[in-house]
Amino acid sequence: MPRPKRWRKVSNPPIISGFKPYGTSTNEATTESVLLRYEEYEAIRLCDYEGMNHYQASMAMEVSRPTLTRIYAIARQKIAEAFVLGKQIIIEGGKIYFDSEWYSCNDCGCYFNHPNKQVAVIHCPLCNSEQIVSAETTYNESMDSTSTSDQCICPTCGYEKPHTHGIPCKQELCHHGHGHLKHTR
Image 1: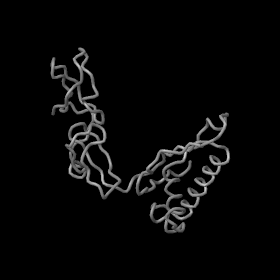
Image 2: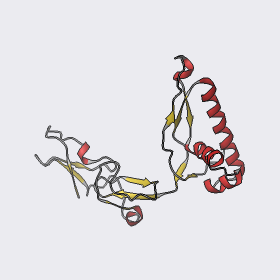
Image 3: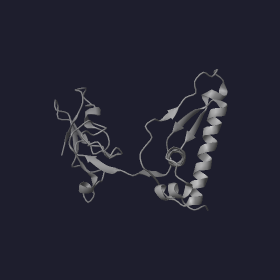
Image 4: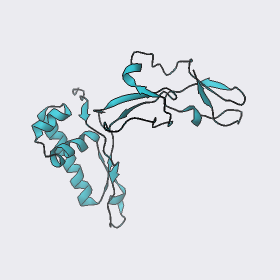
């Protein structure tokens, strides 16, 4: 049985979610995609863009130097495959965590991180509410998603349903056709 993978630290998510080839004729090869995991993106960013050696990059990602070298080699092979065969690159997935602060929305219950440390957090990315707090302040509170103390309620007819954390109440619909629900505690 192989050893479980350790979490890899990524400083920030990429500003793009992938690349598409330009100027290729459409064939089977171009409809396929190459999946570049976040840790592979980070290895390329640290080594090739930031100019770090493998030891420095491994310290930044909190992995061993041989592990960083393997991640880096896989990333370069995937990028070469996409480049030579005209495949698009999709950047997603991997066993990673972002080096940023986490926040919680008091309205929808969403937990999110904020990678740009120079910009203040103003709105929840899910429901656009301004009722956000640092996740450290809510860490010791109960985070049970089946809690019935939070309810979604229809302001017209009073229909209630338990709130599902991570889904804004305004996206839930009343079963009687009265429109969107509102959040109550």
